[in-house]
Length: 139
Image (cartoon, rainbow, N blue to C red; front, top):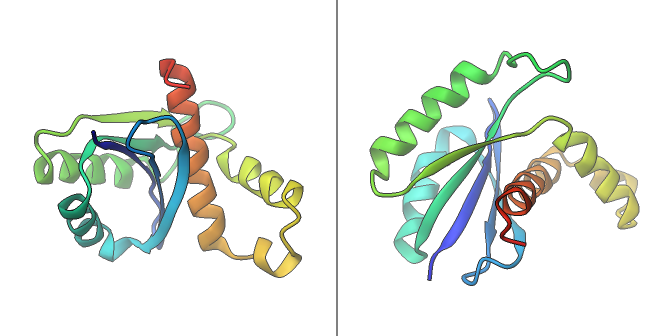
C-alpha cells in the first residue's frame, strides 16, 4: 500500500504531508527548500510508495488565482513528467495558513515556534491533505 503525499508549494519553502500506508491519517512530513524539492521527492518515493500527489491550488480569498499559480502549475507539470504513473490532484489551499496558525495556537505551541514559517508550511500541507481526504470520503 502506498501513501498520498501533499504539497504546499512555496517560492522559498515547500511544506509536505503524507498519509499513513492505510490512508487513514494525514500527518506532517517536513518542509523542504523549494530548489531541493524534486530531489527530495525522488528520494522519498524511492523509499516509500507514493500513490498520489495532492498539490495546493493557490487562490486568493476572493476566489481569484494567486500570483503563485503559474509557479505551482509549472511544478505540477514537472511532477507529472518525473512521476508519470502517479496521479496529481489539486486542492484549494485558501485559508490553510490561517488554519495552521490557529492549530498552533490551540495546541499550545509557544510564540517562538509559531513564528517558524517552515512549521506553518508543513501544517498547511497537512490541512490540504486532510481537506482532500475529507472531500474524497477517505476519512
